[in-house]
Image (tube, rainbow, N blue to C red):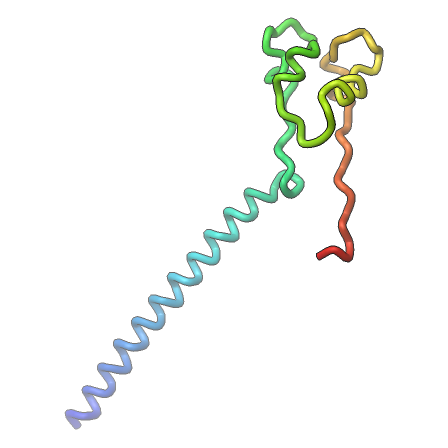
Length: 113
């Protein structure tokens, strides 16, 4: 009877340790998935698009080339991208031009996984 109680207690302690470890592993997996989801939320590795107001540093309602070139681009050179957005070629980007501009989407890399 005493041996049975000791074995039962040891089995219970082992199960408690096993359950605690399983919970910790589960929580770690959930936390890492949350981080991955936040990192891939904006089209994979692409940074989120800045707002018009964040680029228009002097708040005059237009973005000139100096304001535009002070921000990082995910691809392309500043002059080429600026010229693409400035559709009326007046040397500044209006809020309407900025809003209407759709950045190119990355191509799907099917088969390269």
